[in-house]
View 1: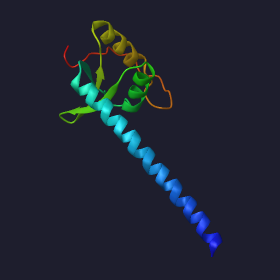
View 2: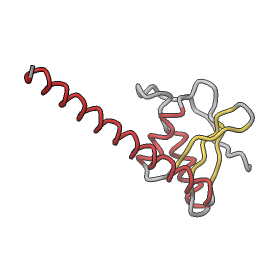
View 3: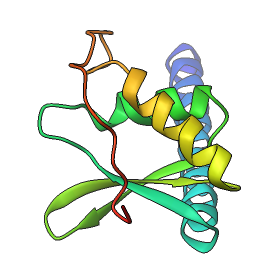
Length: 116
């Protein structure tokens, strides 16, 4: 009987750690989204066929806070910027981001923000 309790306790501890990690990650994402919305940001409509997660990953790797929002029914990527120089750097990161998480290259395109 005691041998059956040990795996049960270990399983409960693992589940508790996973739940805590999900809460921490969720709070971090809320903080990033709040920062992006409350600061100066540029918005880019994610084109059909482009995986938004690869854009987010590329921007985060380049050091930018970004979050997904919606406009009408389209997915829109909002990126916090600190000025005109950042706009061009963000444009470059988006243009060179892979099409999907597998790393397929995206077709050449002109990156235009919604305010342009």
